[in-house]
Length: 365
Ligand code: CA
Image (cartoon, rainbow, N blue to C red):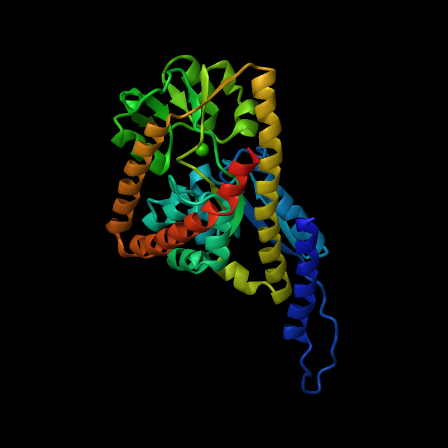
């Protein structure tokens, strides 16, 4: 339903945008219909071609843009490594090798540390809260400011929702059990684990199963039941822990080369923006549905032992997360500016959601 509403909105915007540009009376000129030019764009991604959820989202984006534009904007989607490697998406779009990218902002902390606030922060915002901060809480403006030096316009590009804590071959009964734990966990979550005495390891998705099965690592997180089931991780681990404290609502991103965007007519710009918003919404809806049925399959068909992290473990991880995130904020002025907005939003939405989402979900149980 939401996607349809957005498409209707896109068409309405298209009519308005078309009028802004073309409907003003022109001095002596006949109001001729311009020949319809087909614009061809490349979109590079950090995911294997058509990878479920993450990789199908940019494909759907390209299909919808072609449909809404009547074929005037054709976008060819490239999987990781087809045009550029997975972790060169940011540079490729910044330099104009491709007009668009689909990836995760936290991969670009080496370019600009403040990017880490725009995917997911340990004990940070949920998907719903992230959408609120980005769209109505000042997040989008800050994100554009962070990416402006790179000639990039960022837009939300989907969300996985709260991820799972991960697959473990060791029981986690206390904070001490994290000591010496070798776990594949990227980004800020990995830094938090290190501070708790563990050893974070960074491995690409394709190596998780073998590394876990051969004991190279004791544990790994990936995404959630839908993607984790597809990788067969249940065959290599004893326990499936929750929740994914380290990635409570990972937002994907579309990046657009600003020069390429500026060259688009206003109606195509509107189609790109509104279709990106539709895809952002669509990915969360898909994950919410497919994750819950995959969890049932993991439990009922594969007898997976699903366990909560103990409360004291989560409390300790939260304390350490706040330290790690505050240090990122202190490292450079832009990170500090983003953190101030992010933290103020988190504090307010936490109080609000305590009496709404959280209270309702507790009551429903
Ligand atoms: Ca993850």
